[in-house]
Length: 492
Image 1 (cartoon, rainbow, N blue to C red):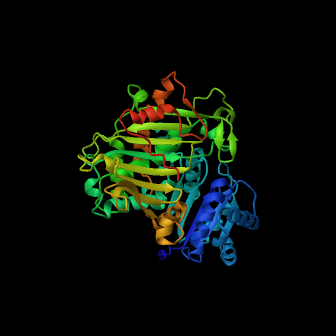
Image 2 (image 1 turned 30 degrees about the vertical axis):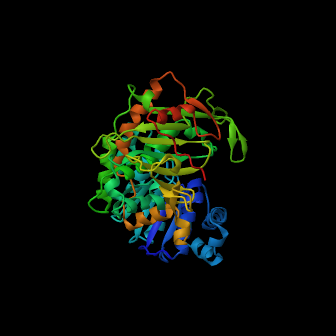
Image 3 (image 1 turned 120 degrees about the vertical axis):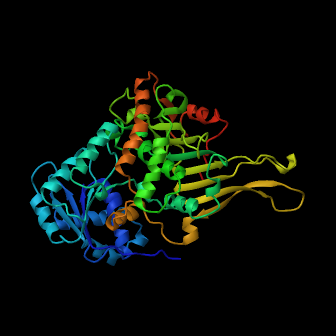
């Protein structure tokens, strides 16, 4: 089976921060894959921007190195690499000053009638400055889009300030707030599973579902990002964006159509229905942790305080939250959100646990009955598993076994699963905002997150310690076991 390749219109993609880690590690490899599949038209250009004085040839050499490091050799055909490098250009621009803007305008003038996308792969403190300068230089056309990465603010007030600054130049229809989790193949399939089949949607409510878990686990630590991370923490870095977006896709009502605003309207309703967590209930519904020295992917690793300058830091590297959605569909169904660094395995999963059967007809010798679970794995090994009870084959009476119906995307479709950025960047060129956050979504998420952060700030309690290489502090186990549930830690 092969995937269908639909070419996009000619475009210029301008990457501010073009010589940074995100560009080399994710953006350029993603664009190369789309180029290799013939999805980018011959006239499409990729223009890197930074303050570093690089020539086109020097930037192409750096891009070649990035492709060698981040694209598998069997997907990197020499002729495709050479033709891709001819799309690559570089302009030295001082985003905070005047240097280079005239040169950028001259380069873009060559493709003035094309779609023009500005990717701001820079710190959020530069979003407003760059956007305002793009407007002043006359570089914003009706066919222009701007792409901004998280973090969009540090709290509600700063998020509003960022949105105001970007919105003063670009219309909301031109702004693409990217969350790469929404571009993952399995996240897309969550929509297909729910709304493309009669099997699940009639059961997708509090009558049939007991609880939901959303896990985003990392084995790595802060990896040189200690300065940023210590001012952010897991709540702001992961929960406010990635995890809440996944929760919205699980919990939202069926949209009337699969267009951007219909989908985002339903996601917004979920965010606005989240039961507030404040100082009055934060202690019973949240757990924050901080990793200590222990085991990592390559052996022993130091604790968090050894990796940041602030030895007295209270920044959390682990969060577990019992969230509730106050509407008819989900009343009484807890959503357990969990994320952390230096955990036992790298994985992202959504686990939907259905209610147990009301009455067993089997005798005790058949074995214990377990609840049906739908496990949607985002990474690694994207796929979907539905856990069921079946009879163990063979004679000798009724013996039950708990086994999964397993669909691995790699095995089922025999095609390379595209990286999230491949899909999302070309969705920008197509003008499709379905997988991007709208301003009111971002701000609604912060309205729920801010009181949690404030409750922690006002608490004298420090984050719970946990040993690197484990599943987090023991208090997170107590959080879910109070309701008679357990974490689904299936590190395969």
